[in-house]
Length: 339
Ligand code: PMV
Image (cartoon, rainbow, N blue to C red; front, side):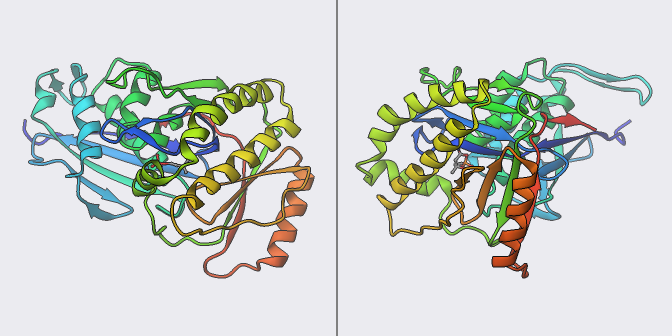
C-alpha cells in the first residue's frame, strides 16, 4: 500500500508587463509599491510545464528545473509549499485505491519536475510562469478549494510577477493595503479574446542569465533612487487608470504610448540606481509598442499582423540569427491549464 504515486501536470504561460512592477514594500511577502498590468502570452509558445508527484515513499520535497535538481531551501519555495499545504483537502482515487486526508498532506512529500520552453532568468519572466505553475499544480494535486485570485496571492510569494500568470488576457496586480498581503492579488481585466488582433514579438538578443536579479535590483532602487517614489506615488497610479481604459477601448495609440513610456521610466529609474545598462532601438514606429523587462530582450506589440511580419523581416535583416539571437512572434494567451 506504500507503493502508490499520484501525479498532476499543468502548463502556465509567462506574462509581459506593460505597466511595470519595480520595488517591494515587503520583501518577505513580496508586496509591491505600485500596481502593475501585464499581458499573458499564449501557453503554446512561452510556458512552464510542471509535473508534481506525491508518494508515501518520498522522504523529502525535491525539485528539478529543466532536468537539473535545484534546492527548495529558499524562502520562496517554502512559502508556496507551506501556503498550499495549509489549504489541502481530502483526495480520493478509487481506481488506485488511494485515500489522502487533509492531515496526511502535512507529512507527504512531493517531487516536482519543471520545464521552461524558453531561456530561464534572461529577463523573460521565467519565474512568473514557473511559480504560477508550481502553485497551480500543487493546488490541483492537494485539492485546494480556492479560486485563482487566492492562488495568485500564494504565487506572488514565489515571484511577484507570477501572480499575474494565473489569468489569461490582460491582468492587473493590485498592490493592496493589508500588511499580511491578503489583498495583494491578481485581477483579470479582459480575457485573451478581447483584443486578439495584437501580436507580440519577442527579440531574444541574449539568452544568457541576467547579471542583476530583480530582487537585488529592486532593493537597490528603493534604497537609492530619488525618482522611484515619484514614479510609484504620482506616475503609475494615473497610468494604471489610463491603461485600463485604453485596453477596454482597444485604443492602440494610447496603449502604445503608455507601454513605451512606462518601459522608459522603468529603465530611467534603473539608471538612477546603478551604472546604466541601456538597450533601446528605434522601433517606436506608430504600429508598434515596445517594452523591455530587466534584461536586454525587446518585446514589441503590434495590432497589425502585416506590420508585425514586416518588422520581423527587418529585424532579421539587421540582426541575422546567431546562436544568441532568436526572433519570434506570439499571440495573447489563455490562463493556466491542466493536462
Ligand atoms: O517578480 P519578478 O522578480 O520576476 O520581477 C519582475 C519585474 C519586471 O519583470 C521587470 C516587471 C514586471 O512587472 O514584470
